[in-house]
Every structure is written in structure tokens, then in C-alpha cells.
Length: 230
Ligand SMILES: [Zn+2]
Image 1 (cartoon, helix red, strand yellow):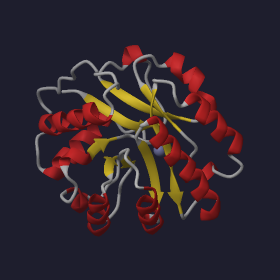
Image 2: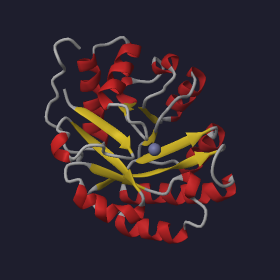
Image 3: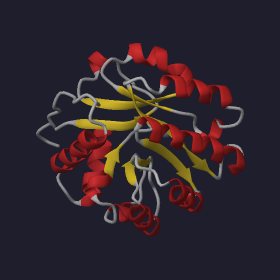
């Protein structure tokens, strides 16, 4: 099976020690040039996290300069967080700039959202994006999941998630991630497959199909063979 981690902040092993999955490594604009030569096989998302959106004008301008690079395959993570970071009146304009860039370059948006479903709903309605918006680390309850599905979002599932919500999300809209956790991406796939009551191979094939559709340039990793006893 092919394994993908579509949102991570670290690649714990060197490429050579880590032959079994491909990642979208999330980097800040200023980290990109170094990351790009360090990690040859993986791709990148680049943006300004909502926690650090204050006084981010020069970083944003730099992001607009580098985001055309073909190794950057998604814009973000960006988004809104009610519990951490500056007030929404600071976060929202920065989020809007990321939306603008995502649309302009036709690259999907990786969205961080904490207690901001209402604001997101209005912003999405207002901006009518054509690019996929992927809510990363989705942990919402079934009611939120259903609303977000209706609104057209996609979802990336990490270490902790709401098991009941999964059944409301179309399988064509699912991805897996490790984010900041040191969990093995294989364990995330296993947990989600278990929650969906399907075989991990079947689930991985579905996620791979989603990745090929949404991120066609993310390199296909060598196939990973699960151990016999797994
Ligand atoms: Zn993250």
C-alpha cells in the first residue's frame, strides 16, 4: 500500500531511513529554501499559522514570491483559532490573503480551525473558493462534520479524532496526517481504518486515490508491505 502524510511539521527520519511514505511538510516561508534541498522526495505546504498572524506582512509578501515554486503544493496551514493567537480581526485578513493565493495559484488550502466554524462558514460563502479546503486535524463532532461536508470541505485526520464523525465524511474527502505528533503515520491509518471498520489496505487505497486527485505531483512512495501479523 502507498502511505501519505498530508500534514506534518517534521520528518523524523532522513529520506533514506524513511522509504515508506510521502509527506506534505508544513513550513514557514523563511524555512522553505533549506527544506526544499533537505527533503528531496517530499512536497510542502507553506503559509503563516493563525497563531503567528500578527505583524506578518513581510512574511506574507515573501510567501507570495515563493509560493509559485512547484514543490509547494498547498497553501497553509492557515485558518482561524479562537483559543490561541491574536484576535480574529488580525487573523481574518491574513487568512483571506492565503485564500487569495490559493485561488490565484490553484493550490489547495490547508486549514487550521479551532472553534471558528461559524466564521469559516461565512468566509467560505463570501469567497466561493474553487480550490479544495482541507480541514486538518479534524476532531469535530458529527453535527459539525455534517455541516462541513455539506459546505464542501475535505478532512485530514490525525492522532485524535471523533470516531462517530467519521461515518458522516465521504471517503473521497479523507486524508491522514501526523501534524505535530510523533505517532507513526501507519498507526493513524490503522486507527481510522478500524473506526471505519474496513481493512487498512482498502482504506490506504482510497486515501491514495484522493491524494492522486488533489495532489497529483506528490511523489508516489514505494509500496509499504504490512507485516504478516498486522
Ligand atoms: Zn499543523
